[in-house]
Length: 171
Image 1 (tube, one colour):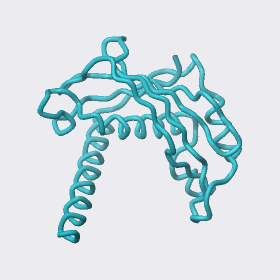
Image 2 (image 1 turned 45 degrees about the vertical axis):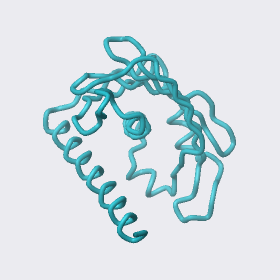
Image 3 (image 1 turned 60 degrees about the vertical axis):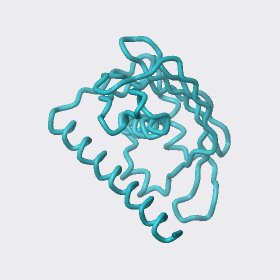
Image 4 (image 1 turned 90 degrees about the vertical axis):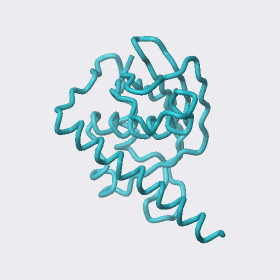
């Protein structure tokens, strides 16, 4: 298994059925891919400086078991294919070493200037190609965990604000 991103299920990610709402998984995969690229030496700041960006164009998700509040899970990230302008990444959510969810996501490389898709840049291509069994689970300090939770709260508030704005403007 390649890179593994730790995750602690948060209260607001769980729906009335007592399991993580399906929409959160795409956010988890986004965070895990960012962690993978950072681990590979390609943090967002470098991607921004080099006009490297990508966007999701297709996702296929299969759920095998539910994940609940305060579960500790791991998200395995495994680049699968690198094409001319797109690449595939496989994700697996694991709880106690058992797969609860698996996904394959296709991303397309785009220019940050808005000019559309572009060939997968060499830096991104190298980061995706370097994955393998030698990668380890990153360790997080309590300060990093607090920072990540604060960031997640800000993202949630942004999503709520956007939805309220849309609702208000459409009414």
